Length: 119
Image (cartoon, rainbow, N blue to C red; front, side, top):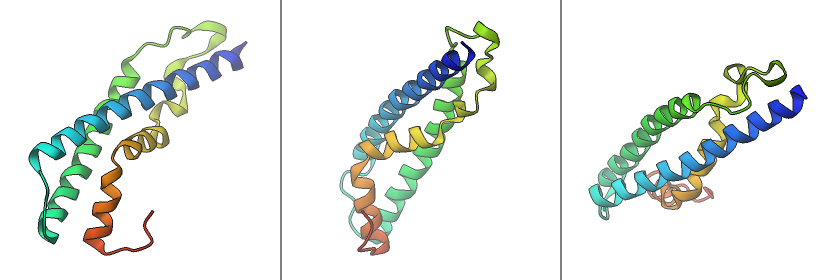
């Protein structure tokens, strides 16, 4: 029973990170479009990339705090403590969901650093 509750906790946290990561990405993309309409030149592109990276870092901090504050409905069942779940940090899932939406970020990286093989 404990293992089933733990797997449910992992799935719960994964879904929260994925959804909040997508929302964060959409907010970052909207901010990026409003502040940097269409940057030209290496300096403008570099500033744009730094802005997006800072938004990702700050947004991820708040998403992690938000996910940790959402109560898990099965907390306490079969001796399960949701606060002790290692996967609650969610770095991989939130990174994937952010870069899934921010497709132009890779193209800008290629332009600034002149990298041909970056996917």
